[in-house]
Length: 264
Image: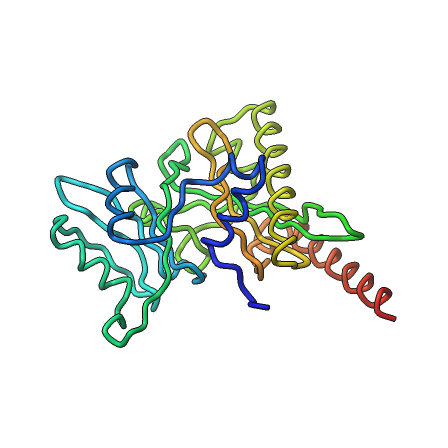
């Protein structure tokens, strides 16, 4: 079995579930034709390498003053920020596929950009860590990442790309100005969609845990960006005196104990 489930395959699976299909951005396989079609319909879009991580191979693409601009990081993690005319859009294609002449093409997707911004205009996202214990999916913890002014142009949020990990409470209260009722509505929805997504993905790509990344649209609706099948948990160690991190570790220990009993 492959050790990773690509972003395109994830979206195709999530479309098959009545709940999760309502919480994913429009996504298609990357081609120049599909990219131009998306940029004509959305304020901005993201082009993402199908299997990369840590913010590599991701670009925000948008139209500005008659040009097509792209801002992000190459698959080699090189920062790139450029604008070209539509006739020269192949320059972007070459950025995505530096080894095309050698017959090596990377796989990318193009995805609707979601306006997931704080009240002060900073991009943010949320991570829901789900774990399977005693045959049931449970929420191990949630956190949020918020960008700095330097990340506004690309909107790429990653621990390796200069974003700050904060609590979900801090994000919803201080940065989004939500009242208690709205916060509960958002968190309940995040949990419900994350648990459903875990059920969907695990039926095709079984794992004991997933890290599920969300944005919130301007109405507070969760939008599922991506599912990480080998999620790191270092971000949880930066908040709440490691309380969530410790909970995830404890659940992992119980999972190991359960596995050992089952295989004795």
